[in-house]
Amino acid sequence: MSPPVNPVNSDERLPATVDVVVIGGGIIGCLSAYYLALNRLSVAVVEKGYIACEQSSRNWGWCRQTGRDTRELPLIRESLMLWAGLNEAVAGDTGFRRTGLVYVTKDAAVLARWEEWLDKARQYQIQTRLLNRAETQRLMPGCEEVWVGGLYTANDGRAEPAMATPAIAEAARRLGVTLHQSCAARGLETEAGTVSAVVTEQGTVRTRAVLCAAGSWSSLLCRRHGLELPQLSVRASVLRTESAAHVADSPISTPGFGFRRRLDGGYTVGFRGHATFELTPDAFRYMRAFWPAYRRERGNIKVELSTAFFEALLRPRRWALDQISPFERMRVLDPAPDQSVLDLALSNLKAAYPVLRDVKVAERWAGMIDTTPDAIPVISPVETLPGLYLATGFSGHGFGIAPAAARLAADLVTGDPPLVDPSPFRYSRMTDGTRLVPETGL
Image (cartoon, rainbow, N blue to C red; front, side):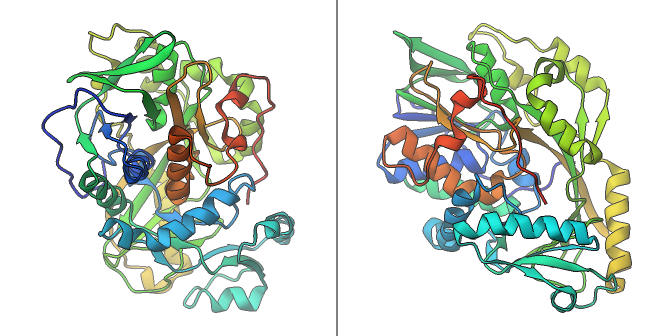
């Protein structure tokens, strides 16, 4: 079941010409449009479903530096500074609160690994510190589990996925951005090898630049134009509870559950690191690229063969731009949650916090996380197709790093000095033989 999202109205008329078309109405797409409009560019956002209908509304809502791949640390540092002023900037509530964030463990070997990560991360001036047993228990009042230690980042925070993207989208509209829902982009037109237009189901928009922020759909759109983008999707399950006793403001990650306090008084609950991968033809197409990531994470990934394989097998890889596209045939990717995983996470939460033993589940859902072989995003121009830019493959990190990632994408489109060094996120690493390996995570 899809989680509820604050509704956003569509603009009635698709513009004939704009400076930039953004494909995808998630948080990356809407924030990129917002930053582009601040640069006085005309922008249209086209979304096959509705604003924030897929992973942007289905994630945990964590905004964390804790445990980040060091290549992403510059982005998340900038993002947290941007998150802190975002409510005021967009004149709306994204739900962001700076609450701190806690990771805990019972395993001394894990604690040692965290210390190694912290040694590397300190060069980025993050405010994470290692916790001993007593400090960990003090940060988790009411928890009856005993932890050997933890990590705490005081300036991490949380936000509300159902609120954030709609608030940003409305702010972008006030700057002149037009928003077009139920308006799938079928593909691109080119002139002299350069992007010249986006063809949508509602008409053609001429433009000099296109930013593809289409999440799990980006690889398919790229392939339509002869571009290889190794990207696979994994299914992550989440639940939210009804209003319950207050036990923590900080999001907390444990080996058996993760949770955060919601503004509505309930909790968002999941099982950190656990995901389901449904085999598709692309799994075999990109097996070599993803093998190092799979070997690292195979203990946390459940592999299934389901109808998704045959649906993907029958999905066309090329289609005429005057024909219905695959994007119109799947308005909202709304996978079923893994009930057993959520039952286990909730049971573990209740065992740890007896005060929550009677908490009621309000809703369960799942989302498809777009991943890359090295588990960091592509935020980059596509050199072989001038005028096309990508902001995709966020590998489950996109919500937290969205403000800086979107700002970086906008900088690349406009040619302004980039907010951070963009080289780790270059598209060319996907095709030039670079060894794509995730960093060891927490």
